[in-house]
Each structure stands twice: as structure tokens, then as C-alpha cells.
Length: 255
Image (cartoon, rainbow, N blue to C red; front, side):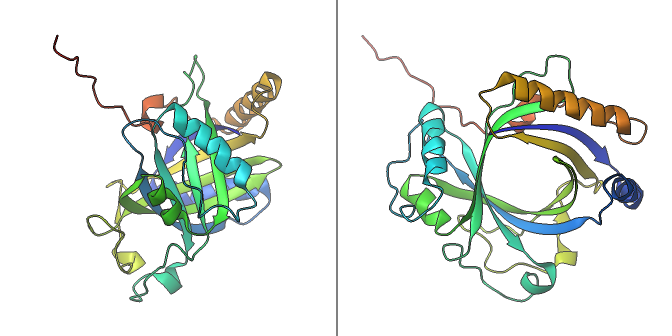
């Protein structure tokens, strides 16, 4: 799959107005969601998935095999996202058993060079509704590193998705996710200015067809022209989205 998207930042004081604009554009009320995202660091050297014991029952095994092929090419940081509910999961002393809860595995590649366009384009694999994700990653040499909370508001028009996101720190808990989530109101935003990030997204399922990718890019540029007076969509340095892990340096042997 290939993901293409535009990016703009929105000040917190302008957020309600921005939502009203997109509500009028899409004729829908925003879908609100909150996710707890765990980050897992791959091995120093690229390596395909060798141990699939936790995945044998998955109906999405072809996606796992595609991910394995990507990991054989380069090592990456992967995300595991679990949907949470502020009123239910925050400030309640609840402990989440991540191996029994369904989560979504997310992998994204380094985006293509921008070539004078504000549209970011990158390969993406998402494997939804999977249990035992931490076990599967640990079995294959991945290690947990950190976590954060993602708060989102999304709108859809035809096949174009408009997503506002804001991210929050969680208390330090070295080596493992925090035992229980603090009250949502006590979370500290990742961005001290508390801005929201707006992404306008399109997915191309068959990324082997350049014509489909070109058409998706043109569609996003039309959306940009439609909203240019309201949102300032800017090119983003692709290195911001780089999830690859640099291999350790090769030290030449002494003769």
C-alpha cells in the first residue's frame, strides 16, 4: 500500500473553526478517537520475521509476509496502536494486557523525495485487529522503547481522509509500558504550543501502478487548492518520517 498526504499545523485557538470548515466540506461530524501507541525498536541488522508462532492463526498472514520482506531489507521502528477511551481507560488504575487486546501494527517506509510538491508519498503496511503483538515482536528480536497517546479527529469525503492529530507524553516507565494511564487531563502535550497536525490522506492499495499514484497525487493537490486560503500546507522534510534504524558501523579488520 502507498500512503499520500498533505500536512499543515493548526493552532489550538483555531481548532474549532478548522473542524467547522471540514464539517461543512464533508457533511459529517468529526469521528473522535484516542490511541495508545507503543514503539518497538528492530534489531541492528536487517532480518526477516523468523518466528511466526503468535501469527499462525492470523487471517492477514500475507501482510505479515510482506512486512517480513521489508524487514529483511532494512531494520525499522514499528508502532503498535491500541484504541483507548478517555472516560474508561485513563485515571482508573486499569492495567492493559497488550497480548490479549487487539491492536494495529504500523510500518512506514522513508518517503519518496518531494520533487517540488507538498505531497508526502511513502509505502505503508497496517495490520489491524491482531492479538499477541508484543509477543510476536519480542519473538523476533524487537524491543519496547517508549509510548505516547494520540488524540485524533477525522472526517471523510469520498476516499479522502482529513485527520487532526495531537500527541501526548506518558510518565517514564523504563523498559515497559506504564502500568496504568494517568487522567487524560493530566497528560502533557508533545508540542508545548499544543498545535494540532492536519493530514489530508489518500491510500493507493496497489502501489505497483504509477497511474493510480499520479491520480491520487493530483486529487490531493486539488484539495490543497480548495483549502489553501484556510490551511497552510507545507512540504515536510522526509527525514522527519524516517523510521529506519541505521546499522552499526563496520570496523575494518586489522591485517
